[in-house]
Image (cartoon, rainbow, N blue to C red; front, side, top):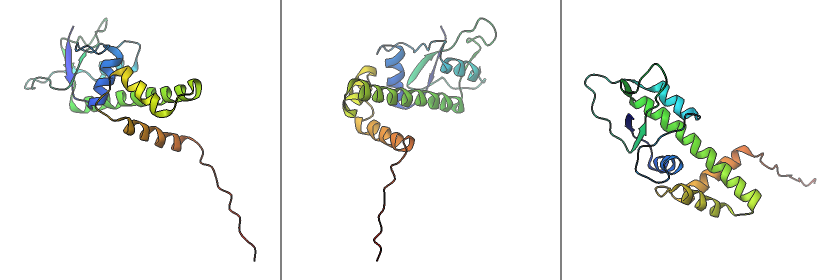
Length: 157
């Protein structure tokens, strides 16, 4: 098992750890059915000769394919690759959060703030506030839904 460390936002680290590791401090093993697994596999490179030791807040297990790109050799993710991985995890996070809020609100009748609190406790997210997640959901909802047009009545003089 070959691992590497990457630097991502704290709430995304908590989300990934809660989703795939059930709150343990072990390296995160991403299932091979996910696009994130394949993206990490595609982004791994040979480690440069004078490269520093990996630092970061998230330790992930590198994909081990049946052939080609063995993780013992291809175990380096540069800064650009780490940003791409962070972006992919962030997209996963927002999609799952918005889907969870909609499901809880429209199917179970819960209000938005309770849904956000349940989501945060489900994945052990503590580094971002409920208000930030809720505001993002409201911005998303306003952008996606059609705005209601007001009817203006003009007085004829």
